[in-house]
Length: 568
Image 1 (cartoon, rainbow, N blue to C red):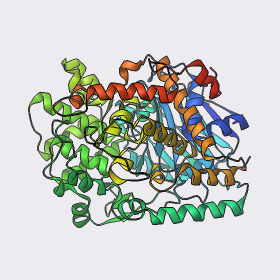
Image 2 (image 1 turned 30 degrees about the horizontal axis):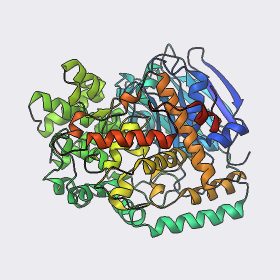
Image 3 (image 1 turned 45 degrees about the vertical axis):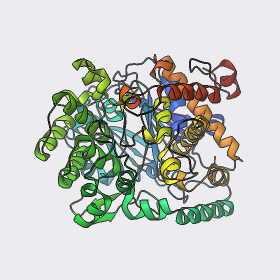
């Protein structure tokens, strides 16, 4: 096979067994890889109602047909599981160099099931797959673990948060790149899996090298010509969004009680750049280098962390934000859910935190010794004020306020992950005018656009490319890259149909897990005091269901599933 390796590895930690199978041409063509393989394999290995922290909930690592190739921004991989935080299907598109290592080891997908009776790590070197005791690593942070294992290959590991099953714990790969949100680290911790280490020596095979080179050159020109990718992200990383949001007066603060933050300049990208010396640490084959490291090896906060430990909690101290972000990395925890949960706690406690208190709280959460480690929704339900959790489907809303970016209102509410901004990054079209400009003053008429961007995001997460390519590359350019790499002819329409197929299968999984149309909503706060019109929101949800070909309750019809070739 070109593009794909044809190799799927299944590891059962309960029996310490390893089996392999062929990926299959049909699955490869219909689901691409990454996120697509993730949801397809979840259905094969688990029921939608599986307990996320039980041995029966799989962890699926997957590459895509462009992973490890010369295509720009193609160094990513995907992790999929049922989230212990949201109880939805949950995939994360993760950067760094781990994806390339998987591809060079000849892996399309790695499925990890069961639970070991002792801590283990999984070591893969080409055809050799070995489970090794990690008892000497248990209790170590992600930095210590990566250093201990780096001679064996690229390392994706959990920290103390995953070991303690903090519900928003994540993986950190190569000591810098996190797997995002949703609690994949907690699932690994419940399995006594400390790390996966991969090394490979097999170059990916390309079907049409000349056409591939041509497609790469076209993609590189578009990335260079786009000001968001070549200027904003390349110069400052995602932190450039702080001043953009502040300028538009839509930087939410204090648990979304306010729609602005009067001290944005103190935490801006420009201020960070002036205060700290850093160096670019790009993911594999990335021309942007939006990730940066301080001289001491600590990561520079991105927009998400700047917001979560700044405006979200009313903090203006730049140094504490940098340190809080580092705590999240070394302990392996999602900064968005961490900061947003603290913000909800501060609202009901009526208090404030100075920088030292904030850092202590982040440390306690990320080491699983705080009641806030379960996330804002669970904590607020126990406090009897569920409505003060600024979340959808249990996932905390990030620092892109849907009251000022109405396309996000629909995207958050209908996302299969919960309130994830990467399910359809509506800040692109509504704030930055990329890849197309949309009027951010209205929600009406955006149902079709949200569906389109959701389907495209599913494609990008399955290829697997960095999500930021969507600022510059359309489905047409991506189709050219995949067609040349795999030898399978894809049109733009073909790719979007793949994205739609993945989205519908994920929706079906969530319905099987007990979610209904009533969960396609936002906190009451978003509809009050001049916020989103609830009537317009409900009409747009209904319109969105029609665009999706679902019934009035948001359930994919038999006809739609048959049209997409989905069978259970």
